[in-house]
Amino acid sequence: EARRTLPKCQNREGGSPTKMAASKGFSDEQIATLRPLILATLLYILVYYVFMCFQSFTALYLASQAKKQRKKDDATKPTSLREIKYGGNKKGIALLSERTFLNMLEQTPAILVSSWLAGLCVDADEAATLLYVYIGFRTLYPFVFKKGPPMLFLSTGPGYAIIGYNVVRVLGTVL
Image (cartoon, rainbow, N blue to C red; front, top):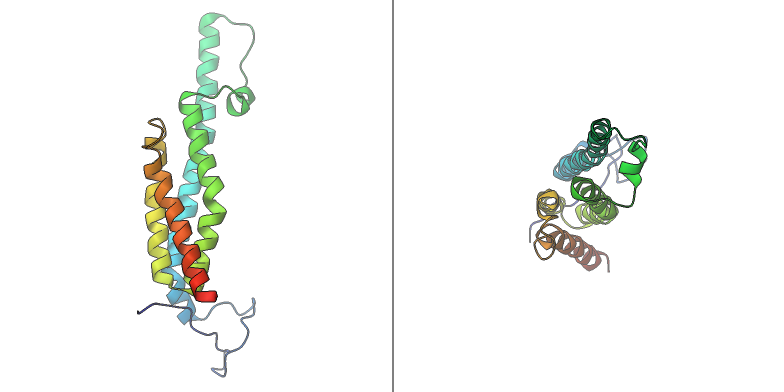
């Protein structure tokens, strides 16, 4: 089975392999091997921040709408942004944006660590491809959340499977 694994680090003079020092970083060959996984990770970070902004901007939007409604109703007690963003009665778009971001946040350590371990220990191209697939399923979350289970599992299930697959592949390599 052909796979791309991380080449050994050579010292800058081209001699025998050495410990990789933080000051020297990865070699050009190592960067080339890891490039697909690096790019997939950067895309993951972009999607992460898009979901985080979706959560924050939703709260700002709902606070603005609540303020307009209070003026219309001539209400005296204002609804604060804090109540909307952190209150316990989330529903509609507030709940959607919160669960979209928090579900991604909950899975971030597992997918990134398992992807990088698989990329470093098993196959960098395969790890990158699986991370792109994971991101694709993750982006379905806000569209299937309102439908609930079992439709919601179209977004989360494949992600759990990819994390599990990465872990098994790494264990198979290091044990």
